[in-house]
Image (tube, rainbow, N blue to C red; front, side, top):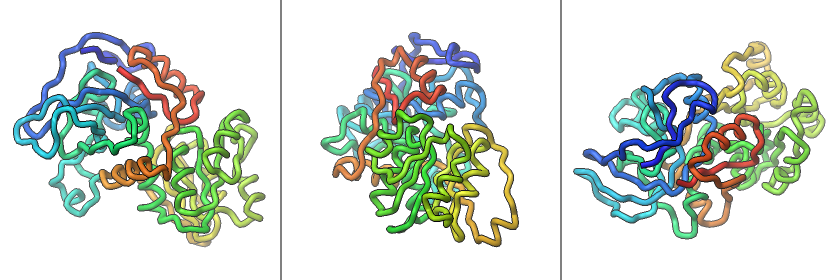
Length: 342
C-alpha cells in the first residue's frame, strides 16, 4: 500500500510517500480502508522527535481516521466489512485502574493512534475493535476525520473538566486551530459568551462566523489586556489553553476570580510560571485535560449529525501532499483542519 512514512526524526523534509507492507487485522482488531485522515499538531511533534513518547522507526503518523472496515480479525463482532467508521484515537488497554474507573484517556498503558502505533497516513490502518465507532448518516468521511481528535479534546476540556455553564464567558485560544475551532462552537452550544484569538486580521471574520462574540489578533500584543477591557476588567470564567509557554502568563492574567484554566497542550513549550498568591487569592483552578474519550467522540459525531456543530475544513489534499499539509500547519496558515485523502 501507499503510505507517508519517516525513517528519521526531523522537519517536513523527512516525510516519504512510498510503498509499505499492508497491515493485517490480528485478534480483536479490524483493518480499515482509510478514506480521510486529519492533520494534527501531534503529527508534527511525533515526526520532529519532540513528543514525550517516540515510536520505533520507520513510522506512519496520523491520528484522525475515517474509512471503511475491510477485514475483521479473530474474535471481533458488532461491525461488518464495508461499514463506515472512525477510529477513536486514544487507545486504552481497558484493564488499568483508570480505565476501570472510566478515565480511559489517563490509561497507564495508553497510546494514541499514530503516536507509537502506526497511524492513518496510509491507505490502510488497523485498530482495536473496541475503539471503532460508526459514522452517522449525513456525516462525510472528511467531516468525521476532521472531528475525531481535536473536537473530542475540546469537548472533554469544556464539558467534562471546566464544566462550562450557560452565561459564563470563555476565552478560546487560536480559533483557527483544530481544538480552537471546535471549542468556539461547543462553548456557543452550551450558551456561553465566547472571546477568541487569531493570528491575523484575515481570520477575524472566520472566527466570527464560527460564533465568537469577540475576536482578538494576538500578534498585536498581550491579549489579556483586550480581554480585561471586553469584560469590564472582570476577566473570563474559563480559558481554553493549548499553546503553552508563549501564552501561559497571558491566559492566567485573563481569568476572573474563581476562574478555570483548562489546558490540553503546550505546542510552544512546556515551561510556565505560576504566581502562587494569585492562584489562591483569586481561587483559580488549573485543570489538565488529555484528549477525549470514546464517549466524547460519540457526542461530537451526534452533534455533527444534528447540525449543532460543523467540521471546519480548511483544505482537502491528496495523501502524497502530506509534507505540504504539515508545513502549512507549522506556519499556522490554516483555519480549521487540513484533511488528507488517500
